[in-house]
Length: 67
Image 1 (tube, rainbow, N blue to C red):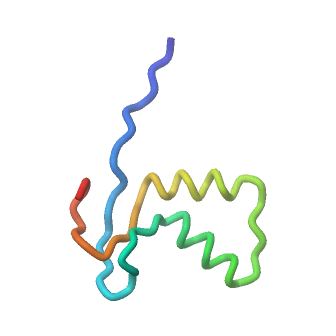
Image 2 (image 1 turned 90 degrees about the horizontal axis):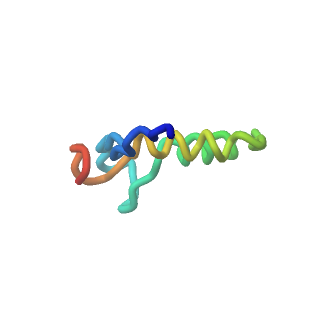
């Protein structure tokens, strides 16, 4: 039986004034940016966006992990 690595909280980067009241993941930022430029998402884009969202989140509040 193989064990999965423990799921950790994403890094939180505080961007006051640039982010709405809701947290937004890095994958969502990239998806919205490329769509606005007219680049169509491919089959793996959703999977990559989910992985990036688990890795980093932009927040209006505290920049510390887990808050």
